[in-house]
Length: 214
Image 1 (cartoon, rainbow, N blue to C red):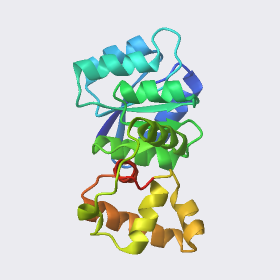
Image 2: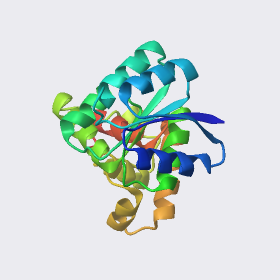
Image 3: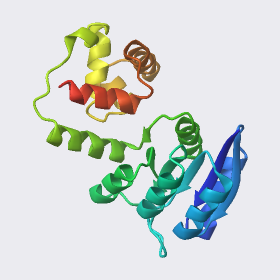
């Protein structure tokens, strides 16, 4: 059972999200917090597996709350769920230790999957967050050269898929670009992760950028 704490100053959204997640198999919402300071206190007291964290709150913003929670209990996973999309805020949240970043217009299924992935230690980024992370990596780690010793495990088609992942593309976009089905793309991604020993498509994209494929 994945124990979740929801921290959001919007009461209706917080209550609605609690109801949706509580209906998911294997997820238990242990508490709700109406602000960052209460969220930090409840995270300390209840020790949830995953904290769903809003960024914009009046008393203590989500970035600082995330930092404080992880200072006290680094094994907790913080998943940012917000309407904020500007680069500085995304980067700040990830730098504070957030393991994922989702926009509030994400579907309930996407949020539930992100919660489960976070509990297992995997990163989960929205398209916007992934674009920011990958762009920053290209700026700070230019001129990387592909590591053929590890990439030679991949088929030519898997290399194509990996390159497109490194450009922040979703499965449907990759499928359209390569004129194959989304299911086939999903199978290729699973094979890439297995061959390279990576936990998620985000890790695969970062791996690719660091090896000059993006």
